Image 1 (spheres, one colour):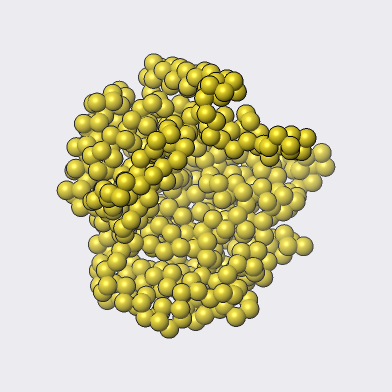
Image 2: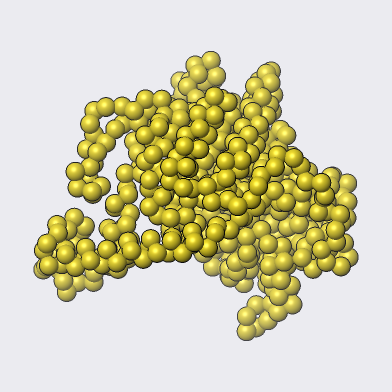
Length: 549
């Protein structure tokens, strides 16, 4: 019943501004110029600068060898624990409960106790200051190989923050900027303690939703108190059994969880690969549901604006063209792109100059560019009205905190220039400038990095597990705070450090980070790139060529 209602709400505007099929090749490219901007040539030019460079063969071999050695030593240490030669710190079942169903699966904890525990000091570091462009860390040490930590009482001051999603620098404590937030705390308090359908609907919540709709250029919007739940609780309200979800293989966990909770059939296409997506769309339209071959009730394409682990940007014009051609729906997650890309910070729809009406469901979060918490769903009024009564996140969740709501309003008005200043535009331009500068310098040094030149997320490939740990420790010793990520969050051979550039970073800060990167890269032999980087633009434009006819 819910899916039928959702289908009725979404279907009317799916067929507007359709792209004729003859303009689309087999791989999803088209050369049709739309009234609202350029065609897929925009995406082609953008994605020409998204190299996924492969590491030399010896790097992959040494990476697998490193994991193999660590695994062998893990089994050896498990044996020593079993015979009592080494103390076992991990949780165990009681002897008198051995006949019960086990709470802990031994093999599942193998990675945690033998690999992660040895390097746990690189994560969950306690911060004791504002998480701005620089922060302070509480120093801690371990006497039992990271099973437990103790604080020394000392503080590591002025560590440059290269891991926060504070893209526009709105995570700040400037009293002049936060005056309106303080006023709302005095007026409403810090919590609502009720859902919006009961007595938790405040005037500032409705003001924020209208502001979000105006900012995105859509009919209506609804806000939620948690960004993760915005995806995981709204996707099940839009699709269900008998529906098909086509999900990018690198989508965020919240999207994956929402898809699984929906009960819909899920198929995964290769990352940003339009041939893979179109092949699945053709099969879905031609074959229908398994066994019965009935048509799918809905086909929902789920993509992200900026992929947080790769730094890549969705090929939005091509996705929209395929969505129109095969009469599917499009769910766009702009958690990392809203506020961070586009000339006025309006995300990938502005970056590619596409009509927001072509995106059926626009989702984003306030936890990054806006320095607050929560998320939103935006689109047609019928869609938003439907979610207000059918989304679990709307019906059961507590309303957004008043100070968080006012912080978002303050930041969004600043970006839109409604506060009477140009500070928002200055920050957007500064972020774009910082991201391009940081990426170009890393390429010149010889690091392998992923992602789009417009993306403030800059993954630097480290590959080997030992180098990941050494890199994080060496950078912290130089007062640079970085986020390192490895298996199972990434493929086993693609461990990396993920830098997040902010408008709050000064050029001196970035230069200091780059100098330390250069030094640590030479020390640990991390400069694997075999490409010669040139800051000059390419002489040919790949959009001049027909890929498929």
